[in-house]
Length: 45
Image (cartoon, rainbow, N blue to C red; front, side):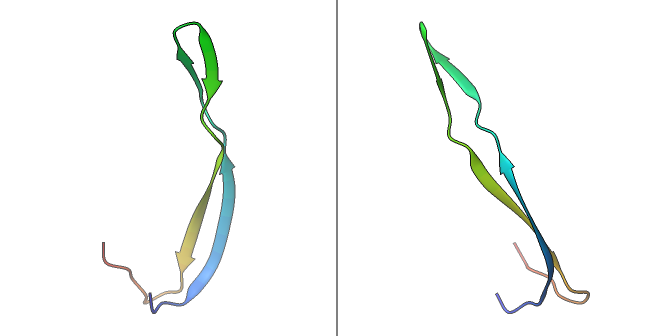
């Protein structure tokens, strides 16, 4: 993407506990980034 980034916040999202019959497992943790663009820049979805 040809945009200018203003700032980036990175957070770790905790995995959830999932149960299959009698066993309890967990989904993995993953990182989420919130990217803020400089004024005047947009990204089309």
